[in-house]
Image (cartoon, rainbow, N blue to C red; front, side, top):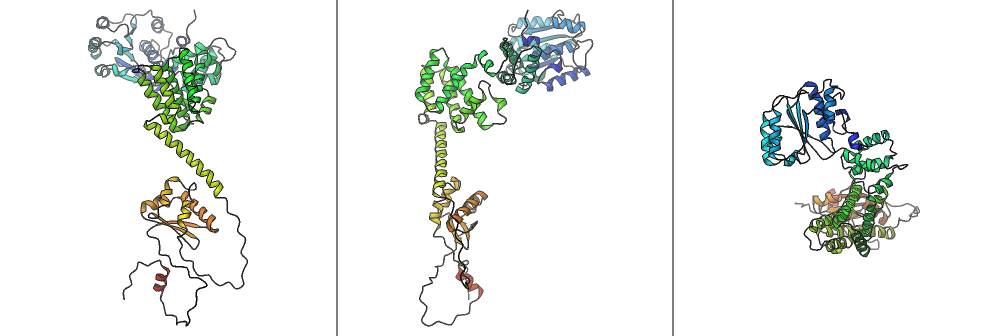
Length: 538
């Protein structure tokens, strides 16, 4: 008789348990040191090894020849417990034995010493299914049990177990098994069972298992149908996940804002018997995968649902910005919650698709954020394109011819008349967040002097916003393109210096040149305009 893979490959020692070393190492040490508790509570999701560890522990505490904390699985005690001939180790299902009468009968039997082994062990699976009177009946014997008695309770819903029960047990939380560990176990089982499973298919099955090794082995058992080779495509076809291609096609229509096509696809899937809640759930899972792949391209592979291949995720991911994926997930979750209360489920699903295809129809905050993000992206692209056409690279300037006996040129006065037009041409060259500051004369004034550009700001906050390497580099390049000389840029806080009129070379000379007056250095500085606020007292 054929035996299912998850039963055939159930762990028989603590070392065989996958992904729960933080629990198995502790249990082995307790067995070695004989520091066993009278009650254990194993918690965790399905298929993570709770029942398997409970059975291994029941054999280890009664084994006649333990091996490093593991049962030998060869002595009469281990063999009898494994085949069920020793009745001192009993496994109960609390889902079908949840009444107070069953627990009272168990309590009355527990006081008797075991007949064939050293400890009487009760394994109670899904203990959260017990009724309140049953928990109360179990409470007394858990508090003061005989020395020969051990309880091992297992549950997937810890919050349903009373606190009085938890406090009398040692709790062990079983984690979801990582896909890499599941894939390694599947490869070993496939090799032993001569199943031609590729590494890609193995990784896909590990992701589909959602952290449960039992689910992974059941999926492998379903796919082992005698094909020459089992790859990703074969796994999707065998498990009935080829319908995910329809979901991916529907998501592609949403990306293209093809409302008519999306509604036609929904109608066709609905006519074919597709449940609307499941369809929206699959759309939400695909949107989640796309969001994880976009936000965490390196570490997000282990978090994917596994129902879609890499090519599909890559092609769809290029069509959606992050803001729109967030909006899609929000709309889908809200619609799924509203389906149970809707008078017409199909109409509700159609309205959902219309809001997804046409963002203007979504009046929620998420829809508004997605539209604003799309506009910002278009504006940024437009500014980049315009800056390439309107601001070409400056042509090389011809070298000036040397003039005979050049006289030293006087120091050029400060000039800020160019700044309004200069600041208006900076769009697309600097971050959009600083454009309002540069174009506000009350906050920023640019002064060109002696081959240097100085930005005078009204406050320290404005100076901090502008005094960044990327912004300074962009301003220097723009100034060099305008004035034709290399420019140094600085940002300071204060009022821009007063500008003196530039003397014209054709200005008329005075009729009678006056004798030059003696001037000290302070008069020169005041005439230069840098210290016009200084009060000079006689």
